[in-house]
Length: 321
Figure 1 (cartoon, one colour):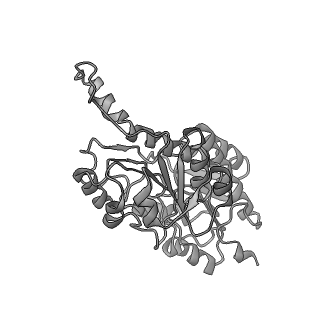
Figure 2 (cartoon, rainbow, N blue to C red):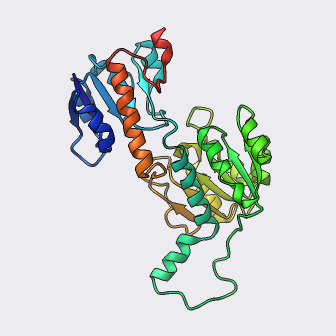
Figure 3 (cartoon, rainbow, N blue to C red):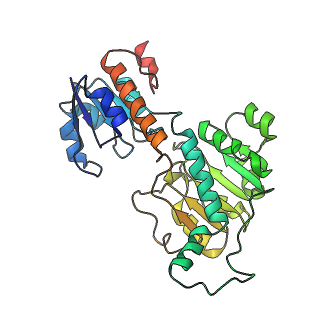
């Protein structure tokens, strides 16, 4: 059987697939164009896709012999799960293995934004620092502050648990209560509006769905403290980026740390010009442990699909009933 991998993934996954199948990998260090994707999946029995690949009805129509699509990502807003389910095509993702890596990146962005690390680094590299001064690069202190977590799923919970050393007051908002957060951290479930108004730091950990698109808009940003810091490691469109640019520019909030963007790979106009935002290029899962784990999961899920079994991380298991 023929496998197509839409972009090179770590060898940990390839080493599982290559002894078993005829594996072809996108030779370019870039996402496939739409035309390239459609051409390549046409002859594939199985596909490992990335979050940059839109897997929808057009792809399903083209990939007539394909037995499944394994997404190399925990998020799957790039996949039309409903259409795949209707056609009884299995889909999978890679949960769990990138939880800690993403939570760690959220903390890295939080500290960098709060303590103006990148801004200070830029001044030092440019040779512009004139010596210590009492009013230079004053930021926000983390210890004892109020931390607001939007979304208490795997990553949101892991992010919250890592706050234990900072004696923080925790607020969270989620569809369901989190007994773990409430028992272990004394966290309190509140409305989004209360969380935004009371938190010194707000970290976003929700999946991208119709109900979460632009969840953080101009109105939400206006509810936050002027000293607050916003962190987003979930999906770019959860935050209205144009509204965020204005909020950062006008002092509505103090700073932001972003790993994801509305229209990747580009950030909103004006964002890069602001010194009070720290930006990383969607690298929250970029650790050796995490990426190897993702590769193994994607390969393992795809093998199960090709063997007619339910993949361990199936997104539409009802098709097997």
